[in-house]
Structures are given as C-alpha cells and as structure tokens.
Amino acid sequence: MTVETQTATFDSLPLDSGATLAPVEVAYETYGRLNERRSNAILIAHAFSGDAHAAGVSREGGQTGWWDNMIGPGKGFDTNKYFVICSNVLGGCRGTTGPASLNPANGEPYGGNFPGITVADMVRLQKYLIDHLGIERLLAVAGGSMGGMQALQWAVSYPGSAAAVLPIACTARHSAMQIAFNEVGRQAIMSDPDWRDGQFYGRALPARGLAVARMVGHITYMSDESMRQKFGRRFREKDGPGFDFSADFEVESYLRYRGSQFVTRFDANSYLYITKAMDYFDLAAGQPSLAAALAPARARFLVISFTSDWLYPSYQSLEIVSALRSRNQDVAYCELPSNYGHDAFLVEVGEQTDLVRGFLDATFRQVNGL
Image (cartoon, rainbow, N blue to C red):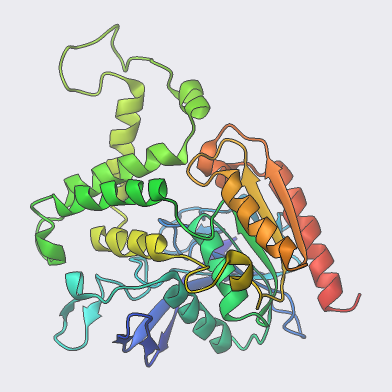
C-alpha cells in the first residue's frame, strides 16, 4: 500500500519544563479505516530513531515503513480490522516540531534554544492528535523501546483513553547503563566542532559526531550472538590485517556505513533532545513505587521482552508486570526467544504477530461487546 504523511497543526503545547511551544506541528500517517463506532483505532509509538512512516510504501520517497512486517493486511496490527495511526514524536526531525523547526520569535531554527522535552510531552501532543482525529478512546497504544515508554505514559496520563497497552522491549525508567550509553552518544555530537552549541543550521553539519553516536547506539541494538553470526572476525575484502586504521573488519565497515547513513536522515539536535527525554523518563518519579504510579491505569496490558535484549533486558519488563500484578491489573507477559538483541522487536515477526493478533482480537471483542 502507498501512504502519504499528513500534518496537523495546533496553536500551542505546554511542556513539563514550563515552556510553551506555539504553534506546534505533528506529522502522522494512518493505515486502514476507522469503523463507524470509532472503536478500532490503534496508536503506534515509534522508537528513538523512528518516524511517522511505520508501514506501507511512502508516496514521497518510496521507502518501506520501519514496522511494515507488523502493520498491514493480515499482519499483527491487521489493517483489514484496525485503523492504525503513527506520528513522529515531539522533538523529532521528520515533520514534527523539533530543534530544526523555525522559532516564530525570530524566524530562525530553534537549534540549541529548543526547550527541553519529556516523554510525557510527546504523549501530550499525541493526545492532541487523537482528539483532532475525533477518536474518544483508542483500542490500543503499542510501541517498542522508546515507543513502549510512550505506551506506558499513555496508561497513566490518560487512563481512560486506551483499552489496551502493549509495551514491547522497554522499561519504566532507564538504568545507569542505559543513561551512560546515551551520554556517550551526546558527547560524541557535542564534541564535534561543527555542532556549535546546536546552532549549526545553514553551516557544516556535525556529521562526524552524529555518525559516531549512531555507531555506539547500533552496537547496543544487537547482541553478541547476532554480531558473531553476521560478522564474526571476517576481514573486509582482504586476506588479513592492513596494520592501519581503515575498516579492516566487516563489523567496522558495517558500523561506519550505518553511521554515515544516519547522518543523511537524522538531526543531531533531535538526537540530543530525544535521548535526554528517554533518560528523564521515570514512570515512578514522585511516587512511592512503580505499582503506585501504575494505579490509575485502566487498560489491559500485553508486555513483551526478548531473551537476548541486553539494552532493555527482560528484568525491566518483569518489573512492570510485577507492579501491575500487585495492583491486580489485567496483564499478560511473554519473553520471546531471539538472538537479535534489542532489534528483535523489529525483526522477530512470527511469535510476536501471534501474540499481538490474539491480544488485540480479544480486546476488540471486549470493547465492542462481541
């Protein structure tokens, strides 16, 4: 299916920092059709480097959506049954207001003057969009990684607005290790002399720093086993070491390629702001416990993790499940076997599809009294 990105504009958006963005735009795509009762809408929240183009083929650029193997006719999020929505997050660089957007106060890109944002701010803008589309209650909110954080935030910020929540390969708050990896990426960008305190628009981009940040991040998305299978210690187009600092090993070449490709599609300032928002995310902040933080939730939950995910390990999903069960809330949990590491939620389609399909079908029947 061919899809086109749309844009909605709102007069203003208050932020947790106390600042207000005015106006604010959000880019989004939709798949499938909204039924007469408006009871079949599902919001997909994307991960850190994702965007609104989750499925189908983009009319603008011809690219396939980042979760096309899960969203579409007959797939896990079956567009023959459901109306699926995906929007680019606040602070992004793919059509939603972010650091590269023009500041109406001076007509220049915000750059480093963009206000700090949180996952709750991202979700607040999503709620504006859902209201704009005339949907009173979502059938489900789902997402992996940072998308799972947004799904959890929906459950507590707008507890009556979604019948089901599917947090996949995520956490209720970042660990010190997760914050550390993000900080290495941020430092790589800010150490690039072309970053210029975020005011680099119209000049040379901090491409070297952003590429290194992506290389570090990409390592965390894989696993030792997946890297062994994909690369091992194989040399790249040579019989042995070159005794220089070129990309001797295939894994080196792969990481350099990933870094250079990322620079062409992502904004360095968005990298800084979004990773910081992820690090700030703590669902239990100001609460005596995670269980207390989840007390307002009224949705059914399906929590999924993967055995080889060392970036968002299963114990973090189990913390969410335990907190929900302690409140006697409706939650199902499954840890799926995989060698793909954190990327598993993007590539392990088989069992994940079966779980999601069954869970959504049961939720739809419950919501519609079938």
